[in-house]
Amino acid sequence: MISFSSFSLREELTQAISDLGFETPTPIQQKVIPTLLSDPQDIIGLAQTGTGKTAAFGLPALHHIDVSVKHVQCLVLSPTRELCMQIQEELGKYGACMRGLRITAVYGGVSIGGQIRDLKANPQVVVATPGRLIDLLERKAIDLSDVRCVVLDEADEMLNMGFREDIDLILKNTPTREYTWLFSATMSNEVRGIAKRFMKDWKEFSVAAANATNENIDHQYYVTQHHNRFETLRRLLDFAPGIYGIIFTRTKQDCQEIAEKLMKMGYHVSPLHGDMDQKMRSKVLERFKNKTLQCIVATDVAARGIDVNDISHVINYELPDDPEVYTHRSGRTARAGKSGICMSIVSPKQISTIRQIERLVKQKFHKSDIPDGAEVVRKRLFFYLEQIANAQPRADFAKLYRDSMMEQFADVDKDELIRKLIWLQLKDTIDVYQDADDLNAGYDNKEKGRSTGRFARLFINLGEKDGLNAQKLVQFVAESTDMDPTTIERVTIRELSSYFNVPTDAAEFITEHLASKKFKGRKIRVDQADPSPGRSSGGGGGREFNGNKAPRTGGARFGGEGRGWGGNENRGGGGGYKGRKKFA
Image 1 (cartoon, one colour):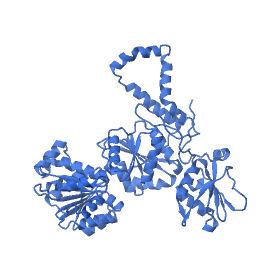
Image 2 (spheres, helix red, strand yellow):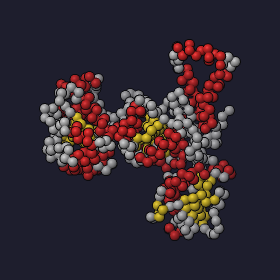
Image 3 (cartoon, one colour):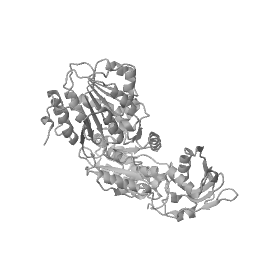
Image 4 (tube, helix red, strand yellow):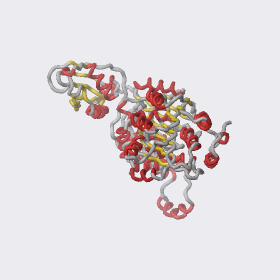
């Protein structure tokens, strides 16, 4: 078995690695480190997050550093502030025994003055985000003319964030660069383009995705209609009282909005995205690592700086656009030999994407039912009972308050006392989930909806003059809101406006999403048209179109009352649903 002691690292690095307790290198480290120690050259390392890339480039980089020379010899570029700080911290640990070694990190979101002072101390290694480094170059606060090695870490993510021109400019400012080490999760055309322009005769090292062979991850997916996505998220959170995880969103706006909604409902969560200042992001990460927060709602880029081994759940609020990003997300759980769960909330038309990701990670995903209200209450009941059974009260607590407790409950028998305690703990959950609809896509409550008036009729300021017919309008609304087109019915097209029916619970969602869209440059306006279901508003003609009558899911109210979960509070949350199962 290969060990770190078998590498020909300088003595100071070997000592630091031993002090850190590292023994066996990861696959990417086994492949890369020997080559970069004996024959440093241009390389490309393809490996997922969490596979030990920092040590793979960090140890060889430090091995070749001359601590007696006081200028920048190695430059490491990373996409985010968090990752930049993480790399600096890890390199500092590896080089702890190298006297005279200085490592400086420069990144946006903090005062540039302090970083300029740090650079005047002549560090041999600089870890930087592209934007802040260019700012420093323009101020002539950093000199890269003697840099021998440049490391591009998470190169694919830097290119996704629009740093291509910045990377080009930075590499052109390293005229004495002898070798470039590029590390990426994927080998996209953009990454290969950087390699072709700035690298020569590179060697390529690749290891399988960290979670492609990780059998400790249980991949689950839950199918619901798009407008029920948030309520599904709440229900999954309530069904996992001890959750400690990350909820992934596609955009910073979704991240902020979802986190704010959950926080208002009492959940112990916080957002983490690139628009937050560095002080706030660092505080969120500290609270999460200390488990003051049970979940963070994060974008993919912001999550790159999270290094926690105890994450129990990863929840994909939406699947990523790039299926390979799924491996980054799911790899956040089941670390250090532990097990974990990766949940994905998907709409029916995203099933094909699930199949594509299954092929990528070489594991079968489990289609799971979204729990109903009775299941949520039952799960939380057993969680609470287990907490009571495992509680270890302090001895002096019983002594101090025994008389008061005995006096208060002298006339209450044990069974009644237990019922009271459990009711106090679960009453909010029961109130919320007393009548809870099934959120699973395919639940056929269409006839029920028709008989109870659970359809809303909407007006939209688009019509025949915009080149629309009924089918085109249904297609536009469905694609703009990710709604199932079979839920859009009774379409009436007029010259300048149109009307259509949608499930009542989806009306607000559709109205809000279409209000932010434009059609051929025109701003869209959508309003409630008529409180009478199935009837067009106003007089006049018009052509009516009845869509496919296939079954569809029942809905959920947005913004129902609820509370958070976890800890000793163990309070329920969830939407205000009506339907499938009742409580005795």
